[in-house]
Structures are given as structure tokens and as C-alpha cells.
Image (cartoon, rainbow, N blue to C red; front, side, top):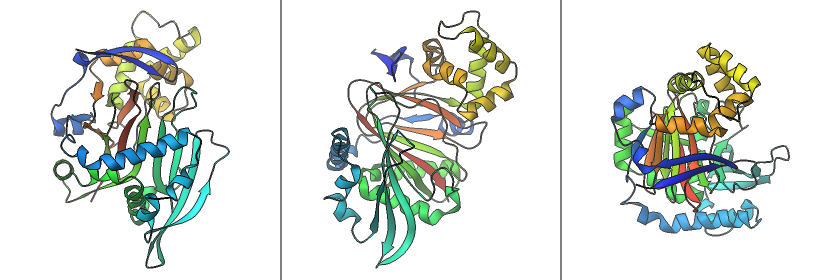
Length: 350
């Protein structure tokens, strides 16, 4: 049995024991209930084939740590040769209004000189504003970020995925995994799945994501693969999260960090679970954010309730995102002192 401290963005959120962590259960049942499902060691036999690509990606992140602009790396070998003849660079920008964004690099997909998909992009960003969190993510999509309905344009969505393949060839460890694809097709009753709206994470010590969902029209869920390092996840369906918040607030003792104003607000919210669910979805209620992401007692409460998963190198986690009620909310912590790479791809059945 191993104990791991949980620290994220300057908050000491307790510790976990490997003996407390959930194990594989029933895939179909878990998926239908909106619960996460962990495939342990699914990639252990294939990771060795991608070590060169993984090392190259680590070098890309190291260059960002050293202050190098991502586009200068991606315009050089080996990236330039992988992009040649398939993607034309349109330059790069930095959004001065977004302190998390490092750089966005735009491309058109081309075939024989003809443009076949416009305004594709990769955006490199810091995962948080916290100065001790060096976590980086690379997102791939197209068009106007957070405005366009990405599911409405399957052509550009697919070419954005191919752009991810060119820059991070280790993506194939998921996209070419036959048994995973077969399991997903059987689970979703479809003939094929596409992996779209891709994100490549580098979770650093003291970093990780706050509780959130990835619900998107046309997508069935998300697959996350741990390629290096180790992470801890809290993951549970939204309707269960609402119930757990209600159960926690109903206890007699309040954590020291939850002041009287917060207590009154939380008591009012748990008296109306539908309103609590709306406040969760808003992602802007400071009291709720503090409770679920920055309060050690609540984090430990979720761990003790069995909502925790440790992902070791080679593990894969499925996160159903079928509807607002059953979508799987999830939160991530980096474990240990190693920056770990992970792939997070939306699952689109067809």
C-alpha cells in the first residue's frame, strides 16, 4: 500500500492510499450510469513503440519552459517534414486577453495545393494561473474557439485530428488500438468511432484540472490515456456529484475555510438540487468552486466514497459524456515529481 499527497495549485488537499482506489468493474453498466471506467495496463505492450515520439513531445514542452515560442519548434524538423504537403501554416498569434494562452498556431489542410479544410489550429496554454503549476496543454480544433458548434463540421473536425497526429504521432497509441476501438464500437452500438477535439496534457507537480465535464453535442465521451507519469482522478456522474455535495453539507461540522456566507449559500443550494446543478454548470459560483476543488475535507469525502482512480503509465480511463444528467465530472492531480503526458480525445460514434 502506498500513500500519495494530494496538492494542486497551492492547496494541500489531503492524501490518498492505493488501497482506496477503485478498480475495473462492469463497462456497459458503468457507461450507462455515467460512471468512469478504468482499463489498467491497456497500453503496456504498445508504449515501447512510441518512445521516440513521446521523447520529442517532452522536448517540445521543455523548450516552452525555456521561453521558446512553440511555432519556432513546430516549424523545424521533425515536425516540418510531418506537416509538409498536408498542412500549410498560416502563422501564429498570442491572445493578449488570455493569460493562460502561450500561443495559437493556425493551419489549412491541403491536398495537391488545394485547401480542403480551413482555419485549423493548435493552442498551447498553461493549465492554470498558479505560478507553481507548470502544467501545459495542447488543444486541437478549428474556427472560432468556444463559439462554433464543432460537431456541425465533421470535415474540419477530422482534419484537426489529423493535425494532432502530425504533431503528436503518439496519438496512434489510442487511434490505432484495435481492442479499445472494438470495445467502444460494441459499447456504443456503432460501426466506427472517431477521436476528435483532441487535447495533449502535460500535468506537472502541483498541477491538474478542477472538477469539470466535457459535454459536447455529438460526442459520446472522452478517452484519456496516461503515457508517462502518474495522475489521480476524482470522477463521478453529475447527478452523483450533486448528491454527494448535499450529503456533505448536511453534516454538522463545517470546514474552517467555508465561512458563514458560504455556509448560508450552500445550505440554500442543497435545499434545491436543481439549482445546485445549475450553479455547477455555470462554472462561476466561487462558493461551489471552493467547496469542490479547494476544500480538503470535501476532496477526502469523495475519495472515501470511492470516486478516486490512480492512473499509472499505460492505463486508460473512459469518461461518459452522454447528457447533462449523466455526464462524468472529473478532476485531476499530478502524483509524484514527474511531468506526465496524457492524451484526452473526444469519442464520436459513426
